[in-house]
Length: 324
Image 1 (spheres, rainbow, N blue to C red):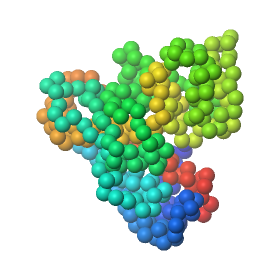
Image 2 (image 1 turned 180 degrees about the vertical axis):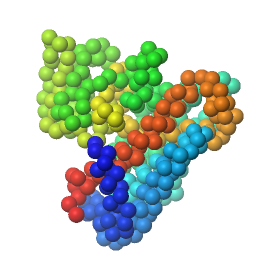
Image 3 (image 1 turned 90 degrees about the horizontal axis):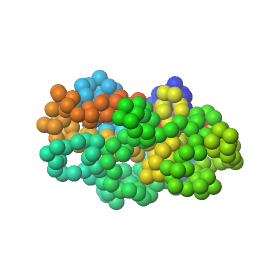
């Protein structure tokens, strides 16, 4: 994942001509009806989504932490809509998908903790819609998830969990490598044998080649015909080091994209910052609980990572599918 290439591709798409050509090629690949007409109809919206997304993120980075969740959430929403226009030329097809697609607790408890708070996935709205059409995930199980659970999937936050003597992810390889290495001890955490474990992983590894046990080193090695390009759960990427991570517990073994995780977190955090102003103001002023370091670090990570991941989604379509 080359950050410079992605930034330049964002710049390349900033004209009506290049945006229309890109959308037309996308629609031709998807075998949509009337690709030229649809690309002309959508190129202006596509440009606005990209531009507004960029402006929200830029404003968020310059703003105090009090308003960062709101700006990053809507920045992400606009970039997601740009990505959706590459595969759904008639988006939005109905008003049902205009809602956020999530719900949060209406009333917060007296001793409220953001880490223990939950969001619930709804049947309709942007979240289930983009999960289906961008990441081929139609049903989320579980449909209710805590903020602590979601934060534990983000590799950049590993140190925060380690400081609390919690290990949620282990490093298994590198984005540019054709090998993944797992410790044998992980089988005990998943309560399965090596054959079953490998069979479960194959579903998420389109370029799986072979596997073997390195008994002398207590390791399981998986070889790939090609390295992973855009990792998706149960594999997670550290944006700075390009290292790949895997959950150590079986209840974290989920077919979920980290883009979905950031959307869930930013949705709830933006709701808290807007409607729980007393709690939010107290947290920022006193930094009284461990909610603060997790929120602070997450906001730093998501500001960089989500424009990069969604830009990679667009750039990958160009690289793999779309000879202009």
